[in-house]
Image 1 (cartoon, one colour):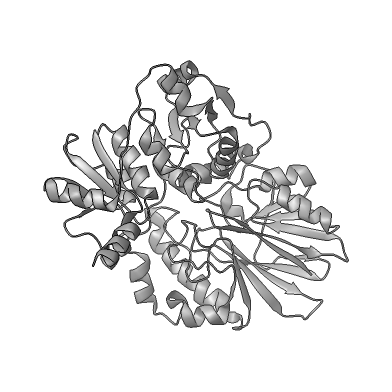
Image 2 (cartoon, rainbow, N blue to C red):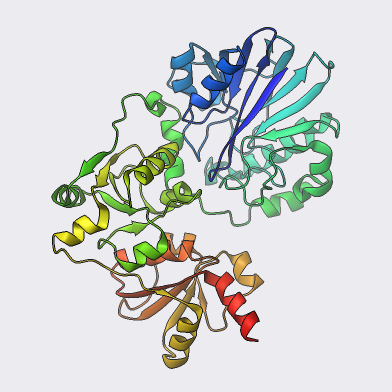
Length: 459
């Protein structure tokens, strides 16, 4: 059996190419939007891709199934509950697919979504027992899928489905069965995922609390607690993943834009997304721009801040950064990228137009400010868990997910410094507050990591 796992950094997406080298046929499971990696791997190993499977209707990234089907002639197989508008073949419980020595059996496992399946893989070249489970977003390494994506009205049903799928459906497999999920660390479809890319049922049963003989009453209590924020673009991706709009074919390359064209785009509702590092953004940025940066998780943060239906104009150091950002952002459904400002902020400044600043404070500078100005606000935008692990005395707390959703109830003339763990989230939050009319906003360089280090060395 041929088996290859692929990962998209930042989003934490896993996909799979499974087949048989002797038979020369293979399938792809949960393909991401940029499908060349599957085509290249198949060609290098003399494999023909004949089937494509999506284990569920994805909410956190755009599927590559339609694109891959058009480029290979393979058929797409999905659960009928997805109600896909593209050409596909509905999956059924117990249905089997053979790829030479590899056999895949479909098992319905609702819970994360009502239309989730697990693919049970047997390598008959080694034995006749199921060797591995491709669990989609049902079971992760160190976590399980969130059940809230189908909506509040289905939450109770989804929690029951999730428990049944984990304990009854997966319960018939022995401990040594390998587990390969559709997501890992970085995904927003869970909240405690390991960086490890696979596990076994036995290890998860022993070390994953939610799979360790937990009574349903306790399971329900945990599942109905507060969930990690669902980015606004999740539902836009769900809608797009039911259609042929997932194709990259026909999408225009980002255009160079002059300053007057950027102004026109903004007048028509475009959002300026600055992908430069925090320090460069803090030194000078175009008024109203949001600083998303260009880190592995930038696409997730863009989904928190900007509606996927809006047009984007990118502000970057160079064209190479623009193309890296375009690939990241298109993975999560941002196809309306009008272009990028040619020569960046320097082009804007050369016309004499005003620039904004988001001063970056060092720890000693912040200590001085807090000592001299008692009414200066220090706003911690980390998660609840991070806050409870330790924070600066006197700081206020509002996680960035809530800040972006609810805003900040403060006089826009007050002075506020934002702090996170490293300085990345605080710059996003700072640029957001500046775009909302707050005038005196600062960001702590290095965040709590720098604060704690300075405290240890000065003690």
